[in-house]
Length: 464
Ligand code: B12
Ligand code: SF4
Image 1 (spheres, protein in one colour):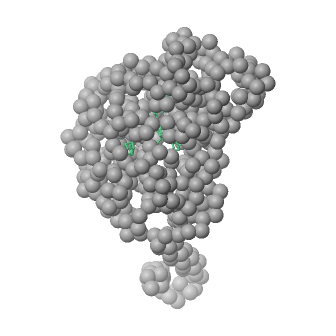
Image 2 (cartoon, protein in one colour):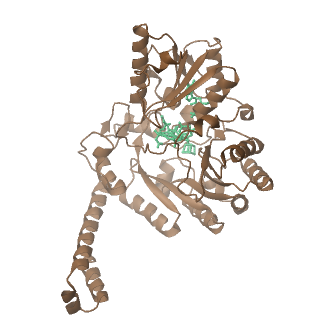
Image 3 (cartoon, helix red, strand yellow):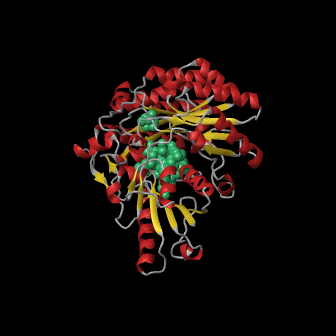
């Protein structure tokens, strides 16, 4: 039996960043499981490189029996287009296989999936896909019990992925090639802006330290891996596992560098940070979100500003680069809250930080609040919610017009937005003055005195 796994192309404009092209590890896990069961696996990654494969007859040419599609909300327009194209082939009697869909979107927006899709898998997919292919599935919507022993899962299909032009680097690591791994599932926290809970549930399961190291060793030997990026929600949640991983990785002498993503509260422990650094941890991507305790509490992040400070200070002390992910524009956030965040970053000087402007993705607690209390100004065709002042914030935080992210003319603004726009205007004036001083003819500069004098003059003007 021939089984095709595929992804959907990113939209032309989106409020979420869609340029980071990494192997889809959830689909990868399914591909390995299905291949081990003796089925022929095919793979087309439209997110990486958009194709017109359905219209070009891929399903017929390769005698595909099942098409398995990964669906996320941001790319769902293209998923819908694929569904319709495949259904069209069936209606015309050109192809008569089955359509299966899985991925985060099936958990957060089940009602958007057309009735003609044969199987809809919510949550973890390995058990479900085997049941479907083996003809043992009961019903159309399937949610299987979570796998307790993740170590039983095979390695990713690296021989397929390694041939494709994915991003094999990591911005905050110096080494290359860097392979992405995902070694845990689920999250016990309840951050109000996040939908991971509704996709995976609160139970946290993870690969053992040995299982992770075996796959790293395989990547080093077969693909020359020099670095690993654990791109998952909470790599360091299970302290015992991290400690064991670090000790065993060091003993193996694989000389691998690595980076991971996690929460700051798990890294307020100097002993752990030092162990990680000694074991080759080069960088951590942290969900810092805000420097205002009031906002952290509204977001139900369950961390404190002191923990953020301690975590970043410890990482810096042990030469681990910190990348802070910040969120802005959540309902109720003021300009003063933003200043607290900005000043915290100035004070702590992490390796890098970025602000993401809040846009509601279906199913988070905050999404429901914004929807129920009608706090949004615009809702788009895939249900994403945009708050008033989104356009002012894209100008300020991304330096771009909001039309590059959403096709809508924003009309409302908060006091926070007005302050941001004032700041932008002030910066514009400063920049023009800087240019004027820079281009003043030397005769005038001589008259003013030395260049330093000109700088003083400029400072006097802009600080007025
Ligand atoms: C690593 C990661 C990435 C990587 C890799 C993406 C990938 N497809 O694997 C990159 C950087 C490319 C990425 C990009 C984006 N991501 Co991302 N990403 C993640 C992260 C942190 C882990 C994903 C992962 O590896 N999970 C582990 C594997 C095992 O799970 P899985 O991929 O969901 O697959 C399992 C099941 O879903 C199911 N399944 C999946 N597909 C299919 C298909 C079939 C046929 C079946 C039967 C089952 C099935 O079975 C799999 C195995 O159990 C998640 C957060 C999370 N906890 O899931 C966010 C997450 C998936 N990303 C998200 C988003 C929004 C994006 C982007 C749209 C924008 C962005 N910049 O964030 C793009 C979209 C790209 C794309 N096409 O996937 C959201 C999706 C929300 C939603 N409602 O759709 C999540 C949930 C983060 C969040 N907090 O909101 N992402
Ligand atoms: S933001 Fe991170 S810690 Fe918070 S609920 Fe989502 S995955 Fe868990």
